[in-house]
Image (cartoon, rainbow, N blue to C red; front, side, top):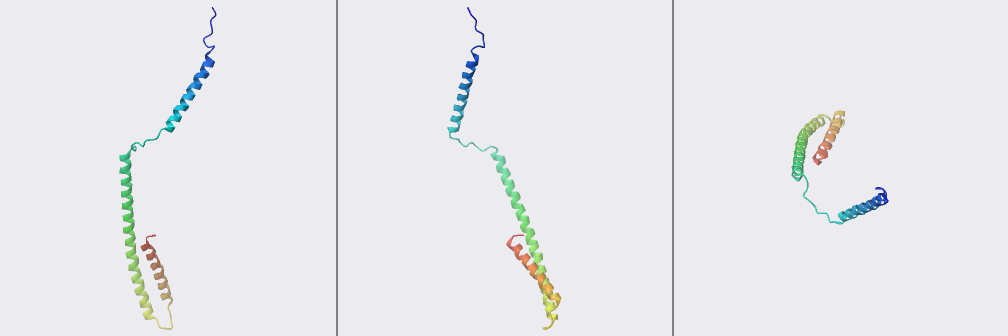
Length: 126
């Protein structure tokens, strides 16, 4: 009686087993990809909703503060415009028809720049 070594036929058997396992994995993978995906419940949805609400509240509060500050700036700028316009009128009243003071031109430039700034702030760009 002739004994065969234990590992003599295993190389061929190992190849067959590996080929079988690979084909099994590939078929399982193909089936998993072919199956329709069912949407599950969103994970951490409670925390995300609370976080979204908190973010929205923070954004709303920030926008409100920015608008309040813009309104305060508009009020002070328009008060300054009134003051400059009053000063311009006084300078014009003091001058005569032949002489235009340099102060009048400077005051008009200040009014123009401030008026432009107020206009832009009213649009909401600043």
